[in-house]
Image (cartoon, rainbow, N blue to C red; front, side, top):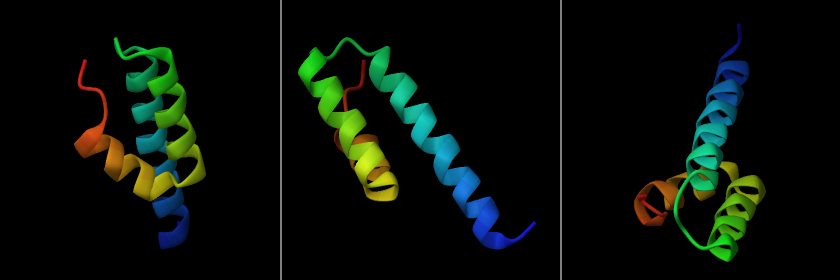
Length: 57
């Protein structure tokens, strides 16, 4: 396997993890949509932002 394939798979897995956590959180629905949009639009940056600033519940 090439490095770029492994990197792509790891980004996909971490983004899916974040989206599942966001959907199951107790945050307002509008905030959930915003976080999911950010992660889909900017996969790496969106995940990093969510990791530090996202809903914790």
